[in-house]
Amino acid sequence: MILHRAAPRLPVLTAPLLALCGACGGEGAGARPNIVLISIDTLRPDHLGCYGYGRPTSPNIDAIAAQGALFEQHISSAPWTLPAHAAMFTSVPDSVHGVVDAVKFRLSEDFETLPESFQSAGYATAGFFAGPYLHPAFGLGQGFDRYVDCVQTVPDGHVDADNEWSMRDPVLRASHHGVTNDKVYAEWQRFFGEASTEDEPFFAFVHLWDVHFDFTPPPPYDTLFDPDYDGPFTGRDFFYDPAINAAIPERDKEHIIALYDGEIAWTDEIVGRIRHDLGAAGLLEDTIFVITADHGTELFDHGAKGHRTTLYDEQIHIPLIVHYPGVVSAARFVGQTRMIDLGPTLRDLAGLPAVATTMGESLGPHLRGELVGGPDRPAVSELMSVGRNLRSLRTSSGKFVVNHDDGGSAWFDLGQDPGELQPLMLSPEGGGAGLKRLYDEAAEEIISGLSRAPGGAAAADVPASIQRSLAANGYAGGDDD
Ligand SMILES: [Zn+2]
Image (cartoon, rainbow, N blue to C red; front, side, top):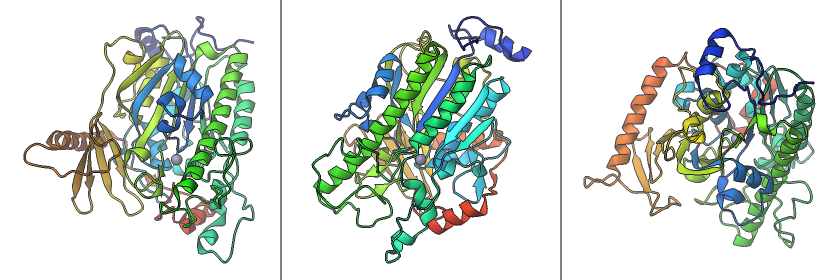
């Protein structure tokens, strides 16, 4: 059987694509590499070894990062699952793709999404998702030949009728319980077993959900980082249980964070298994392997928990690691990059044409070593849901945040105050003025992007079961995900 090696093989591209491919240069041009895009939901880079974390949470990811490119300051467009993945697939910010809240919105069919580009180029495309917001009802299944729902939806009996929080939508809460990595991995294996023996290359999107709360990793990861704890907390119902809050003793917080880290270690094992599968099939050299996330999460950093609540770094700073031997050398890029850059980068590395509506920019020239110095790009993040109306502009050294409801603004000097604990006011002496100018330019670019975008988000046709579930839970107007 023919494997997806980088050896010359007649591409199954259309003639215009072939012409573009021949012109795009780079060792990978025309090779038609496979793509494995792993989105680890809710993964904070500061909890990975390769980003400097002290605990050994991520030996497999660290090994991949050591051989590939790591972007230290990669910034998401949004602090929650639905708009972040919409941005990952369209490479435009929330204001432009328009999927800024649940139930009412779905991604417009008129965008050319990242999987659609690869599908059009003759790739076999597959996606495996385990979080409810990845449901095709929200438009995120566009371009996948196969889009497999691995969400855990069966109530597991953990409902206490005496507790209001426990009664809030047991169906959806069940999606946070338990373990789904196994199911996603099994679906990956099923797909890979077929795809690795076919002539055409493949694009696989692997969404791993277990790092998202609840923090209930399977053994041995449940006790890996805090085996001696004998307190009352389990990581279960992290978000819903009001007893878990910033006022609990530090020792209990440490335990909850140890469970979050256990979920990362468990998910790292899955990443290692996928890498092993590629290696066993001889496809490591011919695959662009990407590890990233949709957003982070707050672990009491600003006195609260979860995400979809602020635009602080713990919610919008995400990892980006790109491994593509022979094309991408081992490198660490310290300058800032953006989630919306990922789509253009993957199309570039694979020799696909650019898409006019994207607002990101390929990192390919940096990854291929064609440009001296790394990228450093201002990043826009937005939260227009759950009663918030926030937009931020972040550079490597500062962040400017605007609340569009009351017109208020503040900025942070990230060099002096990396934890964003001291909001600063704009001052005539120039404090924050440079950030404000970049913010205004970004706002203009968003208006320009809207004029090129193929139309607003279509109304979501969410199945009644999911809609009821989301609404009851407060997904449509509450705080979650
Ligand atoms: Zn998410």
